[in-house]
Structure formats: structure tokens, C-alpha cells
Length: 276
Image: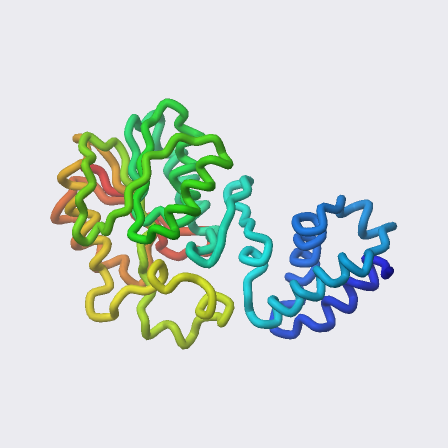
């Protein structure tokens, strides 16, 4: 038996590969999600059993091997809701939360929505929960990602129509769409050397990287698809690599009547809204 406070001190002392400011949040996640303890009660008065200490030690070993806590607990928070994740899908980012918030703030009642490159399904499901009468579709090239997305739709009691599809050669049977959104792969492969090992070693490269010789390939195909399938006045939303903003805006200007570039909370040009 060992107190929670002493266990945390030992735990924190060993997490040399993770910023110290993150230690308490990670430890709290382990206690609440894996050990099912009330944090406020546990931290001040609980003793941990040998079985519980073993679980924490196993988590510590995985963390020291750069496995993200979200993949250890199979949980990730997105817009105040819990989503199931594993290494078949990206861990949802704050920027993508902001994308969803922009969409909700700028659209009243889209009737038919498509999320391309859905991954865990966090965008499609968040929109389905907000726009309760909308018909929501989502696609991804990865069957394993779609298993995660379907599981999340069940968890959140959402009806989503899922398609296994590559937007580069799409056969999606969808027309008259009110809104299309996509957070496609947008990281140059040459950027890999500067990425954190937790991301590089665990998250699916299929969802992260785009070939350096044609970094806009997904945006181009999605834009052409959107131009054909959106209703007049329909909107297309992208999360983007800020490095691409100028070139992508120029490309979109030739296809659509209006383009709005929006910044994320860090001041980076991260989102584009396009109106047909």
C-alpha cells in the first residue's frame, strides 16, 4: 500500500521525457480513467493497492517509451466530450476543436454535412450533436479508422453515414451537400525530424503526412469535389498547414466566390472557409 501523494512524487520523478507541467494532469487521468477513483478524495486520503500500483507502473513504462496517455487510456477529450482513440487515428487537437467552433458559430442549420478524412469521427460527431436535424456523412481511407469512428458514433448516440473512400479517387454517392469539412494530411515529410517522438512513433503517418512534391494534393481534390457537390451557397471548411495558406488561397479563388482565412488561438492562419 502507498499513498497517492507519494506515488505521484515517484511517478513525476521518472517522467524525464515529458514536461513537468503535464505530470499532474497525466497522473490524474490515470487515477480517474484507469483506476476509476474520485480525484479529490483519492489525492488527499486514498492508499493504492499493489494491483493499482502495478497498473500505474505499467502506464509509466509506456509513457517513458513515448506512448501518449490518450492511447494508454483509449480516451481523448474533444470539445468537452470523451472520444475513444487508438493508434489507428490521430489524437484530436485543440486546433480542430477551434475549427468545429468556427463552423458552429458561422452556420445556422446545414441540412447535409460531409466530413472528409474523419479519423476518430470527432468533427462529424460534434457537428451531428449540434445540428440535430442534419444528415451527416463521414469518409476515410482507413478501415481501422472507420471502426474507431463508428464506435464513437455509437458512444455518442449519433447517426452518421460512413464511407471507406479515398478522396483522391472518390466514388462518394453524395450530392446537394450544405457543408463539407476536412482536416486532411498536411505535414511535409521533411518536417518529421522536428516532430516530437510521441507523435512520430505512434500516430498514423497516413493521417499526418503529405508528399513534399505536392503538399496541396488533398486540398485540390477535395475542392474540386466540393465545387461539384455543394449546393449554391454551400460552404467548405479546411484545417490547414499555415505554410500553405497563400498557395491554397490562390487555388481556391479560381473555384469559389468567397474565401475567408481564420487564425487559431496562437495567431496562425489555420482555417479556411470557402463559399460556393
